[in-house]
Length: 151
Image 1: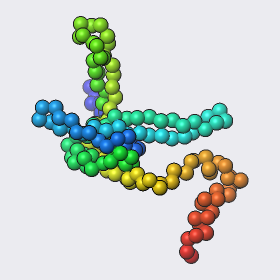
Image 2: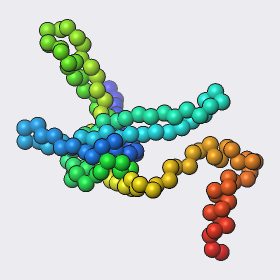
Image 3: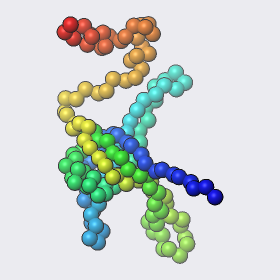
Image 4: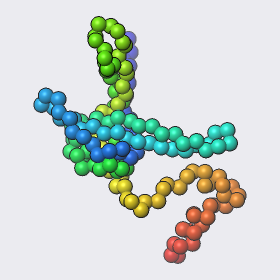
């Protein structure tokens, strides 16, 4: 028989929906947060925005980092995607309702990319490149920044 190898590691980036919270279970401490991600893509002639929210649980050395995060921070995390089964509310464990499945990222490493600034400009949409007059002509915002650079 041969050996099999598997890997469960994920890298995610996004903005925190709230300041992380600290939970204690017995003598263990956990820091929990939610990561919001949003991106746009074109389909059937219109631009669609996709949003998702990922629950994060910080472990080990990432706990100390997460304590300093604030709502809106743009962060990068590395961790494992974990599936847990949770009893549904009102479940009497006599078999009435089936448990619900919860997916969360157990974070082992994290860092802040940037904090949220009140006057921050929104990111440039990828379709700006497609809206240029020619596929070979860069959009205006790139032309302006090129001309502003010293030679």
